[in-house]
Image 1 (cartoon, rainbow, N blue to C red):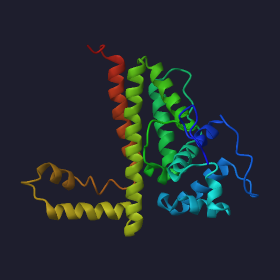
Image 2 (image 1 turned 180 degrees about the vertical axis):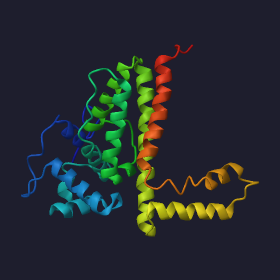
Image 3 (image 1 turned 135 degrees about the horizontal axis):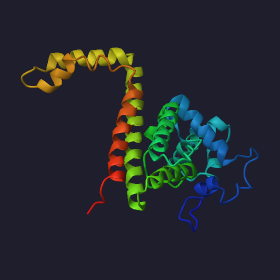
Image 4 (image 1 turned 90 degrees about the horizontal axis):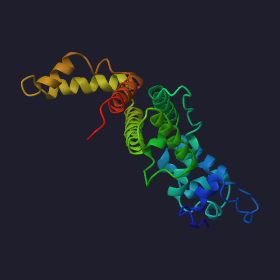
Length: 251
């Protein structure tokens, strides 16, 4: 069974970093941590994150459930490693020091991976990033913000702001996609139905701002614009960071 060591991290996280060796003794069917993670990703991709359990992953591998506990202490630990494993490659940082282009690429590549693995947006946050790829992503983002001239506090606060937006956008897209699949709607028919329902429920005297949006057909034209919404949101956040970069120093 995995143990907590002097780093304060579970043995499986240390193993993912390469700080310890694979267990040498065990069942005839030799396993690696990578194989266990890959099997968990396969289950999540095919059946959703809720389907992932130690027993289900063991079944995927054709081994006894208890054999997994020599590598991973619990399901939550495994899910953390699964989410970390799919976020590759880590985006490269522009060498020309263009921090805005670097963070735009950073966010765009994050969303591309999140859309390929929508279950990853549902993974609960249990603490600061400690798994290898998540720390490398943090390093890449901080390098962009350091190039902008921000101090350590500003770098970390700005990266947290961008990360929160990305996670929120990925979760929203994942949940909307699941809702559409469950209802049998496409995004176009779902939004059209929503627009029609709101028009029936609201009047121009009580909801003048909302009715202006409805009458302009904003919801009717929103189908398929998830990427446009993402770039709009990311762009406005980067505008705010740019004010911080170029504006006067705060008191």
